[in-house]
Image (tube, rainbow, N blue to C red):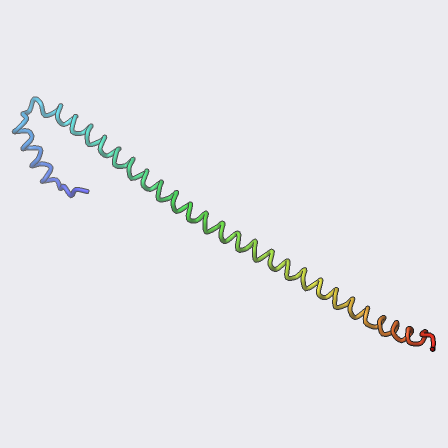
Length: 118
């Protein structure tokens, strides 16, 4: 965040010691440390909440993609099953047509032979 080196912190400490005095310096350092700790905790908490929200948004997006993929796979599976069932029905119908057609020709010949003459 801030790039403070050793010399910058030393200069700030010396100026504070001169301005505040040596008797109030320890109390001021404790307060500054507690405020810095609170600020650090607050910043970390905000970062954590932001990361949690981003993760939940990412998870929601992944969940949507999985649902769409799952629906696509289910639809494709239903389509394949329907297609195979339709092909089976079509084959059965073709077999029945083959079985029925010779009977019709035999029946039609028999009907011609059995017709009474006028």
